Image 1 (cartoon, rainbow, N blue to C red):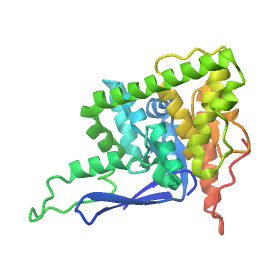
Image 2 (cartoon, rainbow, N blue to C red):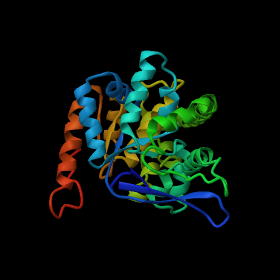
Image 3 (cartoon, one colour):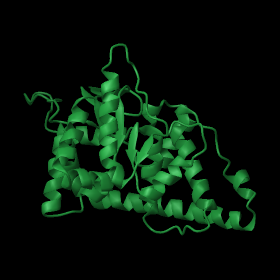
Image 4 (cartoon, rainbow, N blue to C red):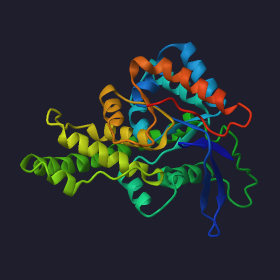
Amino acid sequence: MYKAAQGGPPLVITPFCAPNGEPTFAASVNGIAIYLDNWAIKALAKGDTTLRQRFVVALRNGADILFSIAHAIEILGPQGASSVAFKTFLNEVGSHWYPLEFNVFKVMEREAAGMPPDKCCVDEELLRAYFTNRTSGHTPGSGLVIDLSEQFFKLGTFVDWLAPRRDYFRQKNEELDNILHDRMGLLRAKFKQDPGRLDKDQPQPKFHPTRAATFACVGLMRDLISDRGYQIKKGDGIDFFHAVMASAFSTFATLDKQWKRRVENLPKPNGSPRIYYEPELGEMVHDIEAALGQLKEPGKASVDIMAR
């Protein structure tokens, strides 16, 4: 049994074989989910060792990292000392992570189909591929036992498995980047001709917990479209992904300063988490520790997250 997390409560992923013999997974939720933008992963991996140790202890006490291909694409790039630092940190994270779907539009389709949040955001296809690959030699009669301990789902091991596939995932990310760029360009052109078209073509939905990614995606797109001073550039797709998924599925999140501002400007009321940017990383670790302390209080079933 592998424990991870999403939004509100710990998420437990239980691998098992379906009737057709294919590996599949059952997921349920409860706990503290943390979304780290890549700058935060770098800061924890290469920065203050005391802060990193506190963060790792927090993970072991009931928090988990939301981790996706969008993170792995950049993590797999550094070489030398940086690569060692990243690998050390990922191994310290251990199994305290949750495989997050990186295609925002796929998540929105699942929400529209009425799937629950934990089913909308999980990258089950990738997890199944990892599980199948790691157990390919465990055929009937082989005498081998599948060990689903913490070591099996160690984040460092998972990222090592992703390494040979980096170019493929980078290509997929670029495709999403192009889709976002083209869609934004079209909507921006319409908005420039007629500002009223924005509400007709891209109306802002009201927040609902079962459609949090849709709410964040539409709200952030509207913000970018109406921001005349902002020029859409290559690479914005992955930053947009970070902002949507962090806003929709985490309890605490780190983002760049401009995306922090954009998430905080989403229509209220909503369920967006507290967002921290670079100078606030230490404050976030402190707040996570405080939230975990609240959960340990007798009779406490939820965390009172500070006003956003």
